[in-house]
Length: 359
Ligand code: SF4
Ligand code: SF4
Image (tube, rainbow, N blue to C red; front, side, top):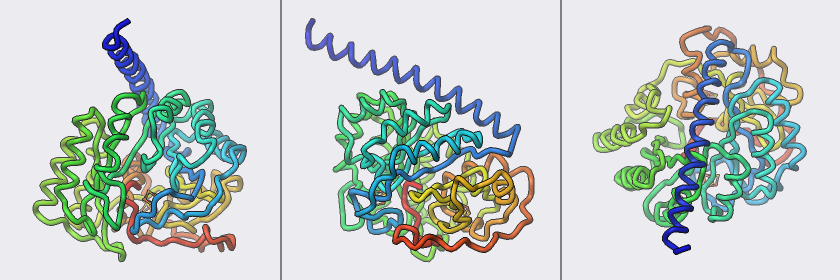
């Protein structure tokens, strides 16, 4: 067999498995949306944290440390079982850096065994051809990498220069869907970088989205005229992304407050490494209850609780989940007082501020 034939045979094989996984996942996503429209009683999307540790240290990030141990795989499986029993549709593994977890593939397998859709947010630095193949075999369905600039700098090493080779590997070998998120807004030195990153992603056959980051005080500030143009162009490029339907991103870009109903604690859950339920990565501490003790009544209460941080929220994944229910069930309850957190360094409360670029 010639080398050329071998190569083209390998790309046909990847194309076939990618198409097969895409169609299978898309069907399950559509079923999950239909189920969520019929019933409001189950979580639609859950972020879980198998390790808080990260191999990078982006200066804007409040979601990592450099010392935490990975959560034991049996404990992760227990948490996934609880979430599956609640009827959860999609699990996104986040961190820290999830690829640092030694049994990540078993966590992904367990998500799939329990019938949930498996996604992951990673900085991509630890990806190799072999690691991508292992993730294919584990059954991963979505992967997102956030790229902050074209050249690494003091703020972030997640640059196109450092990650381009990883994007190439993903384009060649991944069966799962890969989205590249670029960023605009406060602290971004050159907004043209976002456009270069988005075009590179699309040229490789990957999808592309854009996130907007704000000052440390969490204030909404409008993007400048050129940034708005770039933002709109990237949103147009995001043809296969759910986020383009999301009116909130357009409001955030223009510095406008957004009128929506945040259903965190109910339709969206953030489960930290200690197994506690939080509204989201930026409001850790509410409600701060162990997942094992989180009852349907508590989820129901959070569904109807008005979140004080909603008008200026920049957490796009929770906003996307909100679309399912924004049209129904006005929220008229006030948040309950916070449960005091366990006295560990990881469990410090985090209030909304500078949102990590891939939230
Ligand atoms: S943004 Fe991601 S890669 Fe950067 S320090 Fe935070 S968790 Fe690590
Ligand atoms: S910051 Fe956003 S996602 Fe988090 S609880 Fe507030 S409104 Fe919801």
